[in-house]
Amino acid sequence: MEGAHDMGGVAWSDPVRPEPNEPVFHAEWERRAFAITLAMGMPGGWNIDMSRFAREDRPPEDYLAKSYYQIWLAGLERLALERGLIAPDEIEAGKQLHPAKPVAKTLSPDGVAAMLHRGGPTERDPTRPARFAVGDRVRTKLIDPPTHTRLPRYVRGHAGIVERVLGCHVFPDSNATGAGENPQWLYTVTFDGRELWGEATDSGLKVSVDAWEPYLERL
Amino acid sequence: MTNPDHDHHHHDHDHSELSETELRVRALETILTEKGYVDPAALDLLIETYETKVGPRNGARVVARAWTDPAYRARLLKDATPAIAELGYAGRQGEHIVAIENTRALHNMVVCTLCSCYPWPVLGLPPVWYKSAPYRSKAVKDPRGVLQDFGFQLPEGTKIRVWDSTAEIRYLVLPMRPSGTEGWSEERLTELVTRDSMIGTGLPKQPHEVA
Image (cartoon, rainbow over all chains, first blue to last red):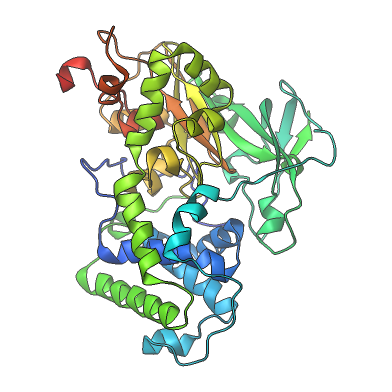
């Protein structure tokens, strides 16, 4: 989708500001927002692509006005509301007003280490051979779906070279909408800086994205 | 897209705004706890894990091992996920890791322009700047400018390669071993490996900085 989250190449006047001795969290509420987001993955049953879409699918002025964990919080609220796990009047009241919905599983303290260690691998057994090989010239498609995609705007319609074949991975564009994992071959595609930003660009610059096969056409 | 009036965004929230957020988080945690969806003890453990156990110290051990053990370095560059698992680091946001090597000729830098993808098992949670608009917008277009923001200049002849983490592959930069460290133990070398040197926005410390 078009959104303020898709930031590659956007003009920005501020420099990057490293923070010396930065703490992991900057406030207690950030700790809690982080932890409830991770813990709710189990009872919520949503996947990472649904989570990302819930965070990025908001008006630019909203996305840009929120801090990082405020976006996480808004995304979590949205997912929980959509599934009827919580209700707006409960958020208003700050307490439970309705019976809990049965959920398949929850995260116990005993399960934390195993859940983190397991993670969420996305590689799947391929059902067909890869269309592209290392060294192939490809062009990214000019897609602009209203739903979730992981092809950034700044590389759309540009020519690049397949640098790595990364295996067959869950396709976010499908997974985010609940249409299933629909695994697709994934490639590291490398672009010359001048192809993306014009002739005045540093000739020594190369930029890559990881792109699923449906994003690419052969050149 | 430009956003000239973004200065007040993202970081500098006034007190009332923060309070509102604090109340909102508290409300949500209360509801989710009362409904039995989350266990506060599990939340505490998640926070403790990322504040005290999982952080750039892990990645530093991987790098120091690669600097001292050529066979390990070869395994790391060939298939980083199992090589990193040898040291006990694996899992969430590090399910598929690729290690990329800096040389005199090529400097690598990692970004996630779309959100904040970052190799948690080896680096912990990402710093604010990594998730910020200036970094996400500038890294893919003007990485030398980003390096200047971090206070260092890449030699003219060094090419630069930016890896945008758009899928579930996570990238770890293997920085160059500083000279003057011949004969150093693996443990001593880990002191030189900074978080930023494993993202590509910094260099390892020099021997005199830790002496």
